[in-house]
Length: 308
Image (cartoon, rainbow, N blue to C red; front, side, top):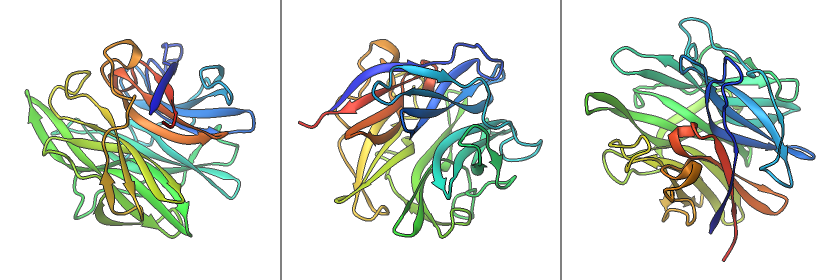
């Protein structure tokens, strides 16, 4: 089962671009440390991405906090003019590619999101957009939104699991988004084929699931993801939980029972919500970085897998 360990980091309002939230953590292994990218919010609730470094042997030990965002907002009118939220990073010929969620404010609904791509040539300190527009966006079969990409290269194919909007529903006078996790493929990581392939079937019509983290092993694929109800989900009874699914080919998935040890326990920084998992193996130990209450308002922490 998973054993929750510690709250690692939260935004303290020390920087004008980082007033609240440290959400959607994504970790990269380095020689003697772990670099964790995260999204934070300014006073206008717009997201930007930055990182911290923690000890490889003790992830609760923060050894460096970066004092700048890795990328600024997009130009007026572009898909990420109101937010740049890290999804995942992929090493590519000595560079780092960051697939991210771009945010722009809406009118009839609160916002629109889509998947962008940026590249770093300085080891992940700064990123430049590969395109001004998104690389995975709305299509005739996906008319609402795309977000929260997780990308791997496997068997010569670039594979992406991502959130895809299925609509909006009005609840208590507020428009709430619905979304599911889908799959896309690419030959080069730039041009993506979206075949509207569903990965995680919702349990009911008001479930939303997204932010996958995928591991590939000898027996197949494991996915951890976030899911919630659309009613009372802001730290309420319908709040995010972490789910688990398995697959033989990465396309057809079997939803499993929720992982043991990760449910909110009513106490501490993740007492009402657990969400946005990122799983990787560190020196023989499987580690999950994740958010807790308030979609990352309480920061992020980690858990470790201890086999029975």
